[in-house]
Image (cartoon, rainbow, N blue to C red; front, side):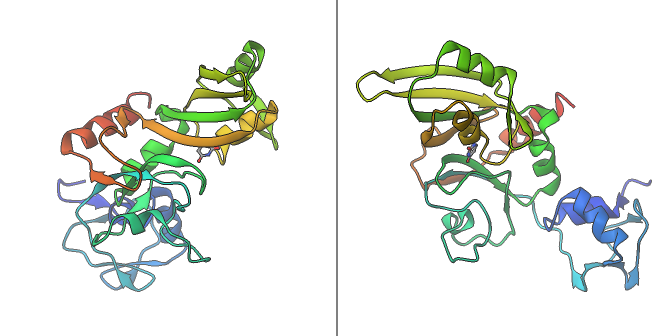
Length: 245
Ligand code: URA
């Protein structure tokens, strides 16, 4: 492959419209044209002068952008919602690029979420084998026992799925109200994982916030705020995702 050639699926993923894997599917499904001709070969090489269309719409290679958002509760971590509820992209006004959330946070969960149009980095970060630390603070109804904590670290079964915490630490206990605050570190990002893990040991989560994603935290931000990542942070994030590959 010469220096200015790139694989078709990579160029599609970089345009921000989808992930690399889904781009491969689009190619196989015959939905991609290069210079007017349908291409169904994975690994087909293109240069920046080639005109690429997906479903008859030309893709444009956007400048990659990376945002860190402090999502409030009551906002959907998606780019649109059928029920017209507020979505994370509403928190960044005047943005021209088509950005997508990296993973998701529940409607009722607040905290750190990344948005980007860099499909390749997003896929890297979301893959559980890359072991990015995701750190949550949960307020629980009840107080976990030592046995319960080690159960969560060993892994529990929930709806046929194994859910495992990397670490769980009790931060404080309110004996009177019988509630506790715990810090939970996950590498996985399964649907409603923290809530399901604590439900399985009969300690419902009353409040949940993601405080950290890899080395990134919410310092200096208020709920609803956002900021762009620095080029150095993007580099560090990519290195963190690749270190366990
Ligand atoms: N775990 C949950 O239960 N919810 C989230 O939003 C994130 C992790």
